[in-house]
Amino acid sequence: MSAENVHQDTGLLDEEPSQVPDAVVETANLQEAVLDSVAEQIDADAEEAAANAEAWLPDSADTDVTVEPQADDDDAAESAGAAGATAAVPPTGTMSTERIALKALEQRLLGGERKLRRREVASGAGLSLLSARKLWRALGFPNIGDEDVAFTERDQYALNTIVDLVRAGKLTEEAAISVTRAIGQMTDRMVVWQIEALVEDMVHKQGVTDAVARKRLVSELPSLVDTLEEMLVYSWRRQLNAGVQRLAVRAEAGLASSEEGREGDEDDAPLPLARAVGFADLVSYTSLSRRMNEKTLAQLVQRFENKCAEIISVGGGRLVKTVGDEVLYIAETPAAGAEISLALCQAFTEDEILPQARVAMVWGRILSRLGDIYGPTVNLAARLTALADPGTVLVDSMTASALEQDERFVLLPRPAEDVRGFGEIHPVELQRGRGHGLVLD
Image (cartoon, rainbow, N blue to C red; front, side, top):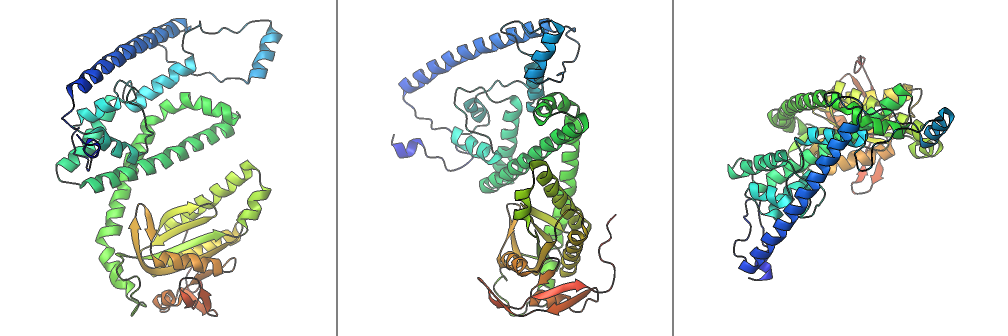
């Protein structure tokens, strides 16, 4: 068997190479038996340690294990010395209450105890190990060794679920990996956001340090898991419905309206979606951040993101992403994009804490992939943002043509500018006309 054939693996449905020399199989079986024996001994030791720890706890086995607030080491030592007493500690070899609580939380989140190795999970799904690793990498899981007991039966079920979609012909292998990667990346960012929000809340509400709050999170989280999971599923269903409407049902109407003011412009014609693309960029953010401490900077960033998210959602748009001091958003019509842009500009101008913002919006066609957007429309909006004065909104001349009949907006032409990648363009300043704009609660 050639080296080329040994590692050949072209898809999720590939099986493990079957023609392996008997000597290799016997060696692998022997190694597996040894590893199983070692694993059984480790599990037995862990169970004995857990039993000893439970016996050491003052309450009965039916009492819930909680993590008590831990004082700083210096404070604890000083307190013990003043009282003339020695703090009780678990017997040598037993698990602390924190470790027990952490293990219980892990088993609840993972659906059980880690009992399976990666090759066992892959084999149970009828996959080669390389194919299984494609999906695990897409989910963002770190690499583990063959001997690591890292998976539960729920991992086995999840792997079967996505592979069954491919086997049934509902998804291609490429689509399955792309969808899996979307889940992994979005949930990773989501849980980091949630954990930091919970830690910050405990620091503020309980008056503890950040380090203490992070330890205490292990005991606080179990009471929140079910609620957070329910909200995640609820939000996903609502967002999926909105996405279907936005990206499928109304896409054709958006493309038709995109031709208004864009006649003869063929550069972005092949792109499938028509959207108003906007950027809002805080002025002097870099210099401000250098003068702020960590807490103040965090408050500024959160205030900026919260205000952007609120205005964009009220205006019927979608916040694509935030990068430091800049937010990228889209809307389905030129008017909706204009309303959001003016509302953002006004909000930052009137805010007592945040600096002013430069805002720009361009109506055109885009490509939506990987939760982000691409195309010359996006690039032009970014270039216009850099040209805008603080507290103003700029659009290009073609976007202005799509808005010129709307009395809600006033359009003021500005001198032509030479823009990298686009040549000479004619910026137009967008101002409020008739009406009151977006109404925020």
